[in-house]
Image 1 (spheres, helix red, strand yellow):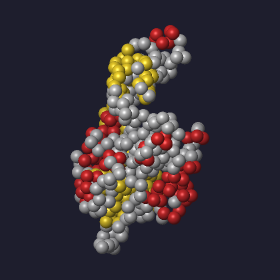
Image 2: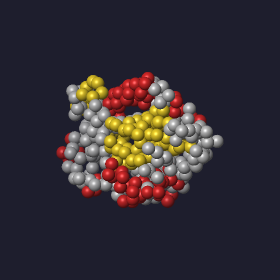
Image 3: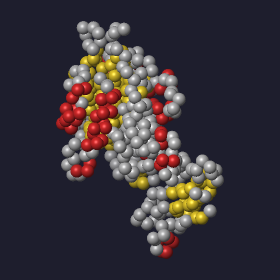
Image 4: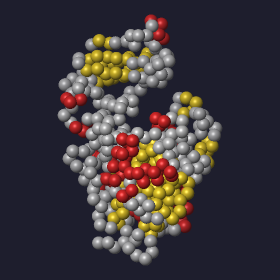
Length: 407
């Protein structure tokens, strides 16, 4: 085994400055034919660039790239890039494959209404400062094709620039879908991105609460570094969007469906922020349910957290339920459950549809699904080119509900 030191282009002085040992990681060779292990000493980078520590074991190469001034921690093993992609026989691993969700959406039952949510990943059509910030035309086309295949009657969206952008996208790519009712609302996000809804049914009212204080202040530290917001009141990073939609019920009177579209604060260290956002929104949910216990409520969108995280549990504790009910749906032989239900390219399930008890009773059993789109290979990261057919780093989530007597 040969141990290779820091960047050979560095000076002796630089190599000396990098030699502070920060810990030991046990790395296992990713080759299936090799089960050997090795120990690699990790070093703390004090240079103005990221350093890499390379080690060669048999014919396999493991590369460790610690962030500057960050303590290297033991991380789950990550699939290694094969010597040549054609050697990979499992098409699920190829760049551009449908690695998560399902490939083909199920047909809606007659009379069912499909409710869905989709993070559009920066649907920005008119970037002010950076022309490259707009979504490339190929991605816009792939996004539209995904929405057409989804065939949702009501679609909540996140990361859209403005109402004009969403309307233009609908007019140019979704004209045949029947989305005659479209809204967005200010969220207070510093990037200017908004939540929105495209609906085949009338939107009666809508509102948002940008800048609303949630109680409490930001802590002094953000992990092991000072918090930029320390001491400031905690506010919605991106205000939820409340929309009341009139849906047909098979009777003279229409039913009203209340949507609360969320895009909670991201980043693992922002859990406290997400929890504050969830607590504030659940208070509004309690008030709405106290006023009208029969009200149909769905909280849907990008939660930036998984079902067992504290912020999502906050919603479950007020009686909301996971409308996708993955535990009730049979898994295909070719797809693992966690892959079938992942909603993000990281393989996590952070986009959801949560419903209150009155709406739960209308959900079609086993109708929930995640619609997969082309993804990067497991060994590829955000720095790698997006594969052909890329639409978003999230996948749309949908569920069907039955309203009225259409049987």
